[in-house]
Length: 494
Image 1 (cartoon, one colour):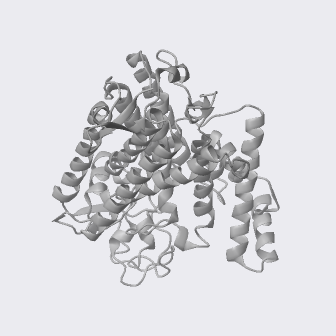
Image 2 (cartoon, one colour):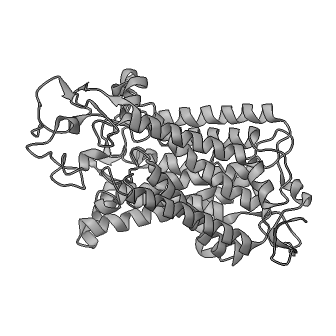
């Protein structure tokens, strides 16, 4: 085993990092093989342990915890708007879900591709998996399924939504995987300088994407534009400036704006995707300008601007490219896991890296770069990536170091089948199908009756909804446990 070293004042070389030895190569995928991220076997033990092949349980727990968090904020967000996505600027609990997923993808990619001898074959499999994940995202979020409380299905191809959660994850997965396969040098990591040298081009790629984002966002000119008002983006006949027209004009003519109507992120999506293929109910409808119930959805005020009805995709093209940098951050955390054997040293380096990212985000915010999940601003990327790293540190210490795993077992199971749970629970496929069986009236179905019963038992719609959602998370944890018992694992690229 070699080690990263530093030179002391006396001139002696002192060990800084313990580097994993070649003996770990037996846990690598076979030539050209890509294994599922849930089956990654990595050396998480101390060098004194006899079995170096142990599953990184904390990563499964992290993935499952993120799925549970998604269910919580999606289903309880209406009762508790403070945990729902921020209307535009700022960060709430819900705004950490997407960065958590992307960060996990990056960590997983570093483990899957830590040794690939047949790069073209590995690349082919990455491209195939990316396409599958993207298509699945279009099917789930393109408009074909209409969600809970809507027993219809089907979508007009002319208005299908192309981008979404899984689509963004697939882009990040492709970005991280290609960088790991083709842009990680073969230099042996025997010093801190060698570590930087090995992954220099990956860091450079992240910097270039970040700079390109900043140049486009602050440099491109956004002209006046217009959109068609349809039943998809009009929920009521509440007064909106210019309402009654078949089209609504949005006056811009600016550069560098980060406000909802005139930003470059929306401009690029309208040009490349078309405004009919964007998300028709964007979060900025919960801003004070667009909702009297802000930060919740509600009727627009009498002087609401016309752009309140405009479509905007929170998982658009430019913001998704910026989001891919979060995968790159996760990739570097995985590299530390691969090259550093000692638990304490891993925790120290992860913690320092995470605190640096978080502080950098706050400094950028103070410098005038606001936090915005819809735009995936640089400050938002830094802070959420830093928090992702800190959460991994906590879970790694609790689950993999202290082996405190039984209380986390539900999250571990959910993490092993994240993609299945996302489709059935977060995309409401299961609840929507269950609501199809009702008694006389559609609202008399098992899902709604159960939720109303709990709300009545707690004499509060708000707290009853929260309890219902917690029971929902417990239910899906048990379902994941059943799938695990049947040896079913399908996390996809997560």
